[in-house]
Length: 449
View 1 (cartoon, rainbow, N blue to C red):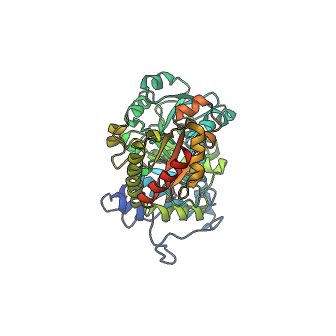
View 2: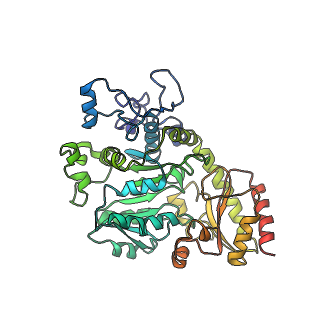
View 3: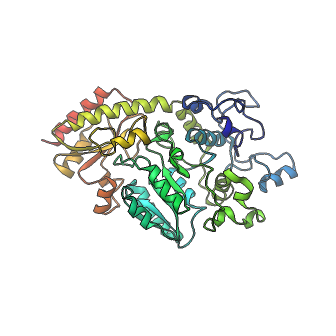
């Protein structure tokens, strides 16, 4: 935590050193409770307060000018900076091993904000075909309105990934654990391809959380999250985050002018030259949040901070339950197949030990005998599982992806993403595993009569 605290930006009491800043780097369980947080200087409150304020008073005219010129860090207006959100940003960055982070209103917002400083009309990204359906739609349709494009490739075929990169490519994008299929990306191999072409690797780490996987350790430049999921962990608020590794040289070429060239809105300031490892973070706040306005609210940040305090405890239980249930399903005659990297039968089992040594996560799919109709009956017959369009909750959740979250995709895209019509996605919670298995058992009985 100390190294990060010494160079943090836009965080609470940013002009004062963290009380832990001279200490050694702390372990994950300590960071998830303490990183970014310190007693409130005005009241001594130990829990981070909800600073429910639109704006913040300047000391004087010179202070205001310094803040607006990015000569001093601090709080101006909550669309840009807020003390509660700042603590969350520092905490997520510390857990991911990044230089800085920017929080925003949703995971989808985080994806757009991660691309915003990199892209321009005519530019493209190379994206995994094994992505959440909403992301596929965002990349295949919505970003076209900005003049951007996405090339979808199977990231298991590294030659295809490399071949898809051209002079207009500005990033490679994948998920650490793909939703819904549970595939594990070869982050080291993908980062080598990105590095060889002088472009960043962006990894959506939502399904893993930083407890199971830290993509920056494997060469990722940027990490995005839907904080709605495991980081918050209780299904209460939406949010997103972009974590910058701080290691990419944005000035090595002319491909990223937003970060390397003079910014007219700040009198010609060059973000990378001025802020170094924090260039992307500062740009995300000073330009991204300023102009896109995808702001997280302070109360949402507070809920997420509370959730993160127990992240490691929850993830261990999530994974233990998922392994137990996936093994049970794999041995049930009513089940055609189970796609979960935590199973010894999975082609990704060996990769898990390296990329996600603490476990393969807690979302996976399984195919039911009887196909589409059986899947629908199964979902409708569950009692303990909640049928919702979410994952990463303390509660166990279920959805039939082909008819919901991936409904907008073609049949070919659904299959490529692991959301074929005959599979159901489970997000395993932290309940008693015997109770979850009992619920699955009775629902399978009704679905496969």
